[in-house]
Structure formats: C-alpha cells, structure tokens
Length: 170
Ligand code: GLY
Image (cartoon, rainbow, N blue to C red; front, side, top):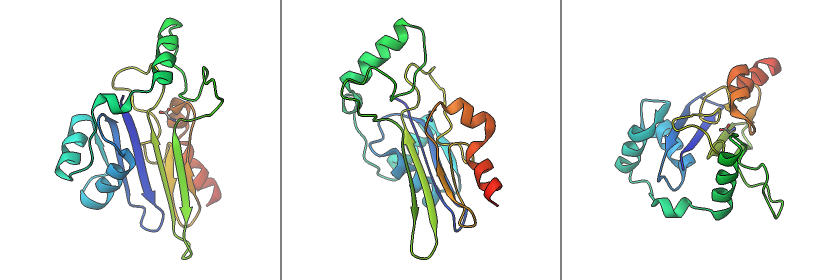
C-alpha cells in the first residue's frame, strides 16, 4: 500500500504533502507535520517515512493496511490489465470507500482543505496521483475556496484542476 496525502490552509497558503509512503497510520497527519514542522511542502517515499519517524508519528505493519476486498479488487484489475479507481466495482455493499477529502471553514473565514488516498488500484510502483500535488488535487485560499478532488488523478494533474477552480472564482 502506497499512500498520498495533502493539507493546505487558505489564510497563509501554507501546505504540506507526502507521496508514496508506506506504514504511516495517518498520512494526512504527516502531511500536516510537513506543513508545520519542516521547511518543505512535499516529501516522498523513504524520506517522508524517515521524517515521520523523527516526528514520532504512528506506524503500522503491512497487515494493518490489508483489506480483503481491496486485495480481490487488485487481483481483478491485474487479470484484466486495467488500472481502476478505488471505489470502482466490485464493491458488494455499495459503500464507496476510497479517497477522502475534507474542506473546512471556520467562523473567521479561514478555509482549509485536505485529501488522503491510496491512489488507483493496480497503479505502477512509484505512481503519484493528484492528491498530494498542490493545485492539482488539493487547494485552499481564503480569497476563493477550498478544494479536494477525487477521481482519476491523471486528469486532475494535467488540468491543474484545483488551482484552476480557485483562479476562475478569483
Ligand atoms: N485521485 C486519487 C488518485 O488518482 O490518486
């Protein structure tokens, strides 16, 4: 399981993101640590995991992330040589669990946006989607709006969708 996550605050335009991480229990909390406790915006892979250890973030073994339904979905995607969205069939109970997005607005007009995802099922090793890319899958600006995208990330990356929506509002 490789996960991506991002958080951005609209008041300051500060942002933090992590990409392609394994074993991080709460990826969006690590993204927030990158925003608040590092000089950087986006950390990836082993470097992000090392940062998580330094920040004493909760870690979990591979077994924690294993979900039988997801494993079956992966086998189906491999058999049909396709890459599919995490909330694409087979989902027997029709619950569409997948990428999680949140946008919040406080009483002072401050907006924040965050996105956390396991990405696409049967994605290539090393593939990073739109979620951790500021302006593609996640964006927040008090002057306009907060945005968290879900769907096939490559389209959001190509069109810089989140920032484009903010610009259109501006
Ligand atoms: N939108 C999630 C992804 O493509 O990774």
